[in-house]
Image (cartoon, rainbow, N blue to C red):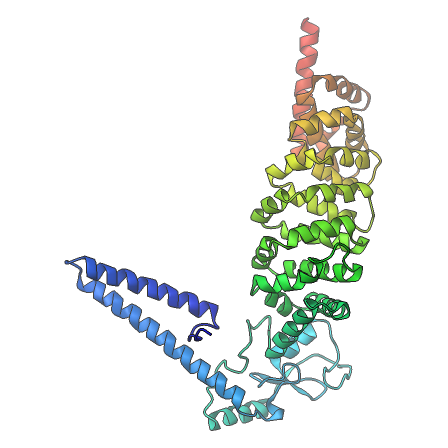
Amino acid sequence: MAKTGVFDSDPTAIAKAKELKREMKKLLIKIEDEDDFGVQTIDQLQEALSALREATMRKMAKSSSLEMLETVSCPEEFRCPLSNELMRDPVVLASGQTYDKLFIQKWLSSGNRTCPKTQQVLPHTALTPNLLIREMISKWCKKIGLETKNQYHPNLVNEEEAVTRSDREIFNSLLCKVSSSNLHDQNSAAKELRLLTKKGTEFRALFGESPDEITRLVNPLLHGSNPDEKLQEDVVTTLLNISIHDDSNKKLVCENPCVIPLLIDALRRGTVATRSNAAAAIFTLSALDSNKVLIGKSGILKPLIDLLEEGNPLAIKDVAAAIFTLCIAHENRSRAVRDGAVRVLGKKISNGLYVDELLAILAMLVTHWKAVEELGELGGVSWLLKITRESECKRNKENAIVILHTICFSDRTKWKEIKEEENAHGTITKLSREGTSRAQRKANGILDRLRKAMNLTHTA
């Protein structure tokens, strides 16, 4: 087994140490290769050496303090009932119980209004510093030679997420169970991980520490052709919860080679809840531009469009959001058109279904020539004009006129229908005055073209 270095447990320290070593290597090469190196080069090398020495000593002192804390039996009254660790900032709750401030604040901010230890309903959530316990902890730490400053929570990721040793133990235990061969253990562990990643950020953060943890989570769904429905739902929902955390989690989840194929399978064969959450996970992951391209290449748009066509009301909004976000990337628009999105969208919109969600997608896809062609064949101009004329939603009017503008400037045969609408209802003129700024521009563009066409007719 490789020997554990001083910096091995701290990613920031590792990065800093590597940077200092690279700097020293460059300076040493300069000293070795150049005969006329200056005193400044030596000074820079000395500064880098001093910085590395200081960081090493600081890390060693911290490690020593943490090892001592682990080996010395901490008095029970000094431990936080929530974290089971030595308190750094003890405070008294309205119930009279003392907790570490960081952890009780986390408990309260999650919506709890009871004392974790006594289950007593709290009359208020004010926290009072426990100066007596703080002083006692300080004296005890000095007595055993423990450095007290910022050393009470060795497993804390940061003050907002509060990952404790207990959290890590629970996390590892659940991952062992979920990746085991026992279906009962898999189901119970997956359900618990789903709940834990929903409630707080600490377990989402733990998944972001290594790609291996995500692989362990999805492992039971990678084997066998018919996954357990409940297990699939819980694992997919946990992936959604993990992806919500931050951009680094989104990148880690999306780039795991097991995840996207698993989500595609969930879209095709899962329960309604599973399919909805799979679509929501894709929407969340697609917030990153690099993920949009990666996901689009996977072939995931086709099962999303199929699910959209199926039209289950519980999944439709998540599916629409996923397709919309993916199609922000231009290369995904051609994929969506190829996979039949225009026909499905046109059918839903013409029937007045989910117009708010779907018209925005169609307004993006219409930049592709084949989408314009398909809309013409579907009789799109008539129902787009109806939306422009009758809708009370300004955004829908805008999207409709954007699509109409593209169709009309690509297909001259549609001008007759536009002209008849304008003569009968003045729809375009009204929008050119009352629509959003974008809608007004598109409406005026159509009107200008109509006037030119009419002048040409009169001249002829």
